[in-house]
Length: 158
Image (cartoon, rainbow, N blue to C red):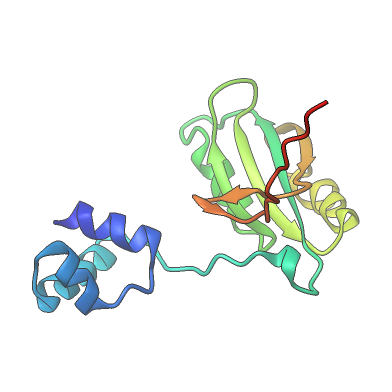
């Protein structure tokens, strides 16, 4: 039942307990208790609202930063990740396989603010070998949700 609840609330964190219970064939109390237990166990780590900021008047720039590091003796990558994720600008930190070690996602109002973060904060940390910053130009789909308006294409024949 826990995995079924997780699938439901992953798609809609605002689902009504009554509706979830009906869909799962359980009582509201069973669903509520299972959710509370998973929150206590940090299986459910939080709830958030996905916003398409491009449709608002607020300017936001999102960047994905590839980071190569020298792992630290005794703690590997964990201490470095802990230092990176303490910055308010950082929205996500992922340990990666391949040509670099971490992907860091940040959001700011301008590209200049992102450049200053990389220059003044991220790249100055011990163990950081180099970074490569990639700016997101347009989001089409984010966490399973389609964001971009797609126009119906008209077939043109010669």
